[in-house]
Image (cartoon, rainbow, N blue to C red):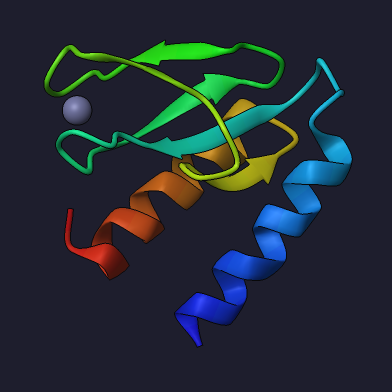
Length: 83
Ligand SMILES: [Zn+2]
């Protein structure tokens, strides 16, 4: 169920990756922490471990239109993924 959801959102991300508005929920490849990046940015520093990683379809979990939605969704995903 989760795998299907992630596959769908990766496909969705590919179609919206050129947008400059909106936010991406990304997962740090080093520690697994979820954080929010602006759509259109190419790298992100992890707020937990401080390492910089590039943003790609591999570690983007969701695309959302606004910051409030992004932080709510991040909280929900953290609970579900137990990060
Ligand atoms: Zn990290």
